[in-house]
Image: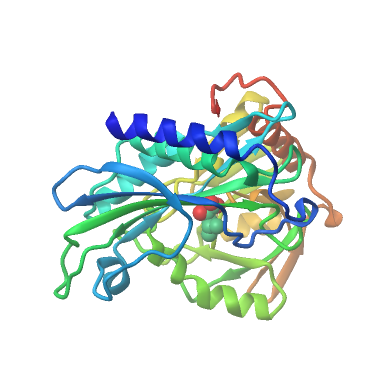
Length: 356
Ligand code: COI
């Protein structure tokens, strides 16, 4: 509780200093890294509890060359966003969901993790300290990137003796260069993202390095990103490199069920609830690659991508297009439903937002 009081004091001070917006081009935000003012750091020894977290000036961190994260990939990350409302106040979207997901991932990666309260308080303090970097209403969001890493030195393969929880933030606009225009995906049928019993279901850093090869090859061919199939049957949809996938057919919305190899997206879960609240039938099940070829609409969801319509899918040389290069009716309806909640335009009947 000492550390939380300390954050509140620190962030109060910073918020007084930082009411004026940062001087950047708010109309042309993409999804690139923009350094901001402060980062949050909290440490813990193996078998201990995180404590004494603090805001520090944003900058480089020092790590032993022998740190667990550098040598054996003992690390997790999270992603969430803060939006500025029309009245200037700031909204966080379901931060406790990220905290819980980090705790599950930490268990899988043999790491201690901050409590949900510590995580949420740290996110709040970091956002308030960097308030001048939260884009104006309607211009984007502040992407919040919590990291949890084995920062202690190891040589033999073992959990690190020390852990660091760190949060940095960066203002962002659209994730794909297409903006909100539909993206073109290629189905990868040789390389796989995850295996049963592996770590595909947690947000460990290695899952993302593992997709770079297929992603780079796809981009070189002009595709926006890659859609992965399950590695056992090679016919069920898994996810895209950085987001989950949904298929719409005759107004029924289907998405691959969570079964250990798919990242349990918070946007995925939120879209399912928004869709159901709008009267749609939503099915979480195995979805075959053949169903893609027959679909009326396809879209991706993720914190970074929000909801991104898919304009075409290419599978083994065959290309199928959707929606005449525009966003489909169902995708548009769900996109609006979700983002209006996140930006505080509609009343938050789901109780998902946290106003700072
Ligand atoms: C996010 O959507 O927040 C993610 O963590 C995906 C990342 C590859 C940008």
